[in-house]
Image 1: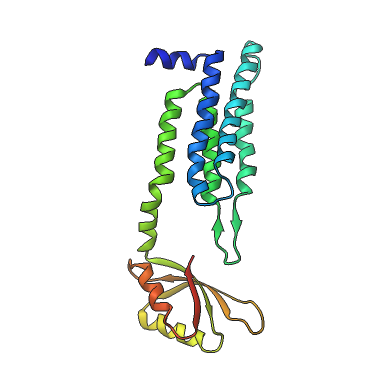
Image 2: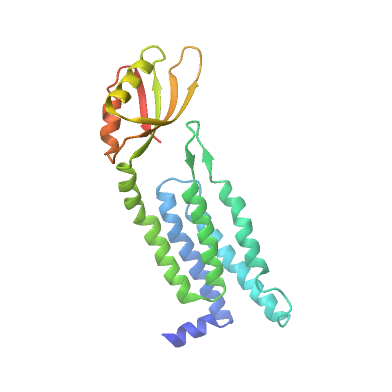
Length: 228
């Protein structure tokens, strides 16, 4: 096993082929989770990012070897890390409800590029370990994140309420329940439309958010409600 790893970590045609294949496969598997959630960047994007980063690193090693160490061995990979930021920014959007979307996709593209650099440089064992950790992070940690969010003391809400009756009823409910408004933004879409609110509440203690939302949905004048 150690001999095989040592051979693959050396710079030869076979190891280059294996590195490019591994980078493509790693990128595909990472992109599957984003594709399943119908994100902008999917399997093809992640595979190309990881493969491109690996190829850029291999080219840099080749140039370094060709010039007997005169070329900067880290210049192209450093450019990849900087350049991937522009691609990541394109996946981040802010919805009309002031919700930020695409951060996980952007972070995934960045880590896929970093993984591609590691594979391209011949760090096969470390790349495999990193790949496993990435898969665990994107597939299993969301469950922990959701459990934490579902019972957080702070809750963010987007509401559309009747501008005549909804405001008073909502404030009365919040006061009776003992919730503290930590952030409030009002936006009225048009003259006759509902009043749109971006609201952040301190519940005072950890509570199930779906219970809070169920209670608020029955408040008179609240026509639409969702957690942000």
